Structures are given as C-alpha cells and as structure tokens.
Image (spheres, one colour):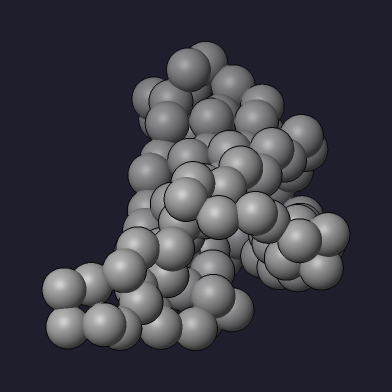
Length: 108
C-alpha cells in the first residue's frame, strides 16, 4: 500500500508523517492488497476568531479506479487524522456489521 502525505499551509514534520502512516497501516492493513494508493492532505487553517482548524483529507484509490474520500476536522491533528481514517474505513466496508473480508470492491 503506497501512502503519500502532503501538507497545505504549514511545514509537516516527520513525526506527523509517521503517525499518519502508522494509523493508516493499522486501519487498512488487512485490505492493503486491494488498495492501489492512499493520499493524505493535512492542512492548518486559521479561523477568523483566532482558533486553528486542523483538517485531514484521506483519498483511498482501489484497484479498478474506485475512490473513497473522507475528511476529519479537529483542533488537534491526531484527532483529525483519526476521524478521517475511521470514516475511510467505514466507507470501504459494507455496513456496520460487515467483516473486513467484505471489502467494497463492487466498483473496482
């Protein structure tokens, strides 16, 4: 499974890249043979009232060109990453009662 991590509006650290790859590896490792590519964009936006909004956008490309997008938003990068990865995993599997062996490959 190839993972590309990019940052928008800030300099990404090696620790952040490692965290993203570790989290995705744990969440998607069992279905990695079906995944062609995973792209992750991290961004840090300043809101008008002075707070920051950290965003993580995950794009999972399956064999056969099917694509799954998910986004996580939180003031904490790690939580934004968790939200985005969890949403991607939920979209990859059929319903909440499905096992990981029932990967959504209908479009692939």
